[in-house]
Length: 134
Image 1 (tube, helix red, strand yellow):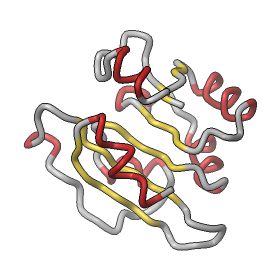
Image 2 (image 1 turned 60 degrees about the vertical axis):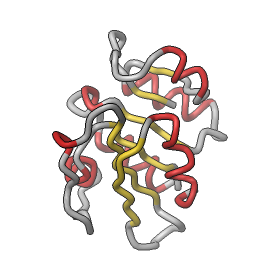
Image 3 (image 1 turned 180 degrees about the vertical axis):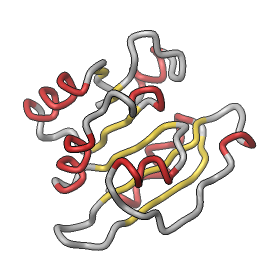
Image 4 (image 1 turned 90 degrees about the vertical axis):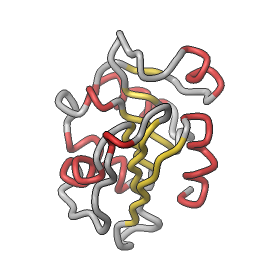
């Protein structure tokens, strides 16, 4: 699932199609999609959508074991949304051009410690970069 504004220019239509991302434009649409399709394991979030996102939805999805991926978003912002303290410093987003900065979080099992990954990658490389967290 990819929560994105309707006028998204961060990812191209081809990138979204190749990654098999189902786009939604509101937190309500996201919650409905995830409820209807429990096989979805990863939630991608556009940086412009954090203001409109209900933190409760993300916390619930994190608790349910889904991988949360924030595109071009500081790790600290993702952690703050989940009411957590990151274990790694933010990466310098301004130094990264021609790709997508990724902050991701996944709970390995209920009650397990928070596990963060923060890295830079071209969008097409993100699944490989994050595969260790799935």
